[in-house]
Length: 191
Length: 278
Image (cartoon, rainbow over all chains, first blue to last red; front, top):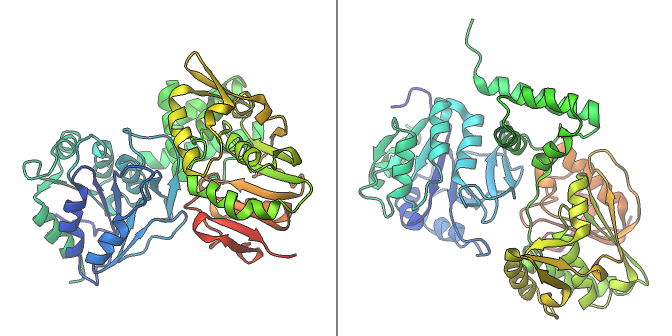
């Protein structure tokens, strides 16, 4: 399935996100070479406890994204709560407080659309469990830029609405269950 | 010949539009963070019903009345009163005790947008008994935003969040003391802006205009590219009095700035910096 080598992974998740991410991210090997950009819908005003939780389970660095930060391989960047996370074409991260998109800030669409601009065919977009439609337009943009798209199997997802919406917008996406996603991502590591 | 990909054409159109706005109207967005500008322009294009970004350019060049509508899309800022309550708590508990030692004070809210931060600071300074000795400068590049800030009217459905934030910031009064609610809107008391100067000022092109004790510029510079951020921080550096304070947004930092050495962390977790002695 890989024609162009993947240079970055973008993941979007909403309801049920923590369990899904815990099934995927800790599986990434310590020498995982790619950056992983993650948008999770969390209530604003809540101190983001997700980064420390994931860090305690993961073999690579987990951090909240900072504005203007250069993207580096082998790190998981989480969108801070109440900010959109964007990728600039020079492959640095940017934050914004622009209005909500799909009732969400951060929005998966915002990350995926800007990452698709920056990485084109070198991007892999992954939509996991969720109870809304955020990420569908974003995943479509990833495919249109020539990138790869994976959607968590709706039948096994904690909440099916987001995977279903992503598949409707992006029928060519590959459907995988959560364990298959974990092992596929791990395989993107060093040979 | 290979096919030209759409995004490249669009990126070129954006570049040309920003150049046109600069040359014709002296609004300079050329060094704004491009990913956000692109999203805003694509949003503007669809909301205003244009087929292309180039079509926006043609219209705005020939019809100056189009400019304010476009500026609204390019400069839209969404904030809440007392956004990040812990920031205001830190100002109240850590910064204001220092400011209290001055007989008169100047505070600059740079990029004030619709004024949420202006009213928040005015209320904070009132509660702490410093309002009457302070002049506030509230600046923005968007004249309509400045007019909205000066009017101080917010939709009533936003007040609950504002009230909650104010309480969490350690507010000593009730937010409802400061506004009158009618027709679904909350009009803030004009005593909160009696000492506020609302003014057109660009961090991109304008210069230092007064010596400040506190500058609050939150979630404005995230929209700038690195060189423009450096220019803006340079302005703040020159504007601040010895040991003056600079407050940034919770995810902003001076760490990557060329001016980093001119400031020290004052309340690190809240991104409140202090100007080092010159």
